[in-house]
Image (tube, rainbow, N blue to C red; front, side, top):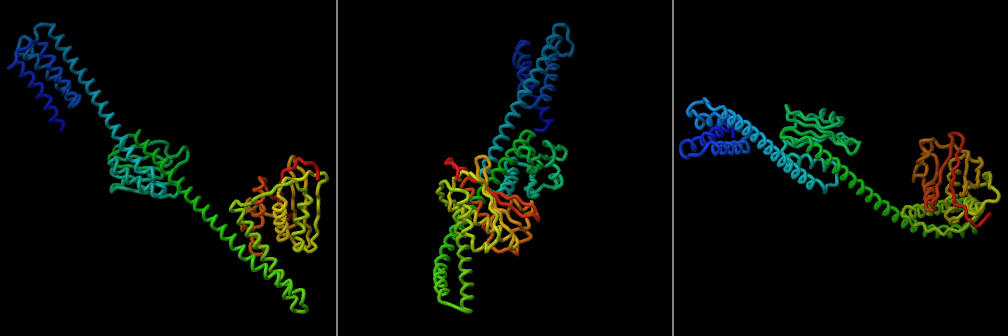
Length: 476
């Protein structure tokens, strides 16, 4: 109902009460005043405070004209009637204000209830999404539908994208949204019927939200952006978990394929090795040189297959250790024996501390790890340069090291040197090998619950260390 009609209706109600008691019903002044007061309360509750105030003034004038002597005039003879009339006016206006306040509170409570219901509907619509970008697209669309906004726009900072919904997105530009991501709180522009709010998860900014048209309250807008931040982060976490699970499955499949392939390769290699060994025993001259090449390459393929099998088992977590007390000297000797062909008379410097207690380890796997580190030192150091092997006690750990006189490792590459297939930038196309040796060594050490690390200076060579727990059985 329009304002003039509401004022006319309030005056009409007062006029009806005055006419009822002055024309139809005989009643004392108290009854008339109480009836007028009830009518004014009803006007305040239904129409508003302004209408009730006008009705109060009209009731005072009408009550004076029709019921207070001398009747038919606005003159009051008895001073007590002035007091009664003033009390009536004050009571009517005060009652109207109280009624209006109660009505406003009820309307606010109803509006909050509706906003909470809309927020709940928005949460229900968004809770199952698992893709951040899809979540945001659905979010802006649902926001317009549920809250009846003219338009919604969301700026997603991690990908620098703006998602919009609704035909009236003009008042909130991309620049406004990017700037809103840096503000501290909700900003509402009543003149433009536009609101901007930063979207954060804790202290981490995710972007901003812009609304136009029918705007929710500032308090509800804060709740919306908080819910949006939580929902988007949940979707991102689900996406990361899905990717990680897919990566784990892919890695497991790859490990199984590598393991199967390596075993299939080893079977014909064994036959080739046996055949070439027999031919070498009965050959001479030029044929022997060719057979020697076949024999050496068969050995290299055997080593490659062994590395693939070892890497596949490490990736699949299928290393079954059989730990026992073993001396550092025994481990070093086993590794040197395995690498004897590759060493080819290379100078070896041994520095094994006296009185070392035995280490608690799987001898076969530790010898394999040490061999991989030795092969790495041979690949990256000049021919004829010495290789240093050391073993010493540090606290309750036996530390074994392999040093070379190679070019060293740059600082920014040391953290990646144990990754599969990683090669130094300078030697990417120069060095033989599969790039799995140090990754295998790290996998074996991690299976033992120990660590492996490198100390290096460019141009001065590198030293690779790994630790093993000292056995309580005494010195070796």
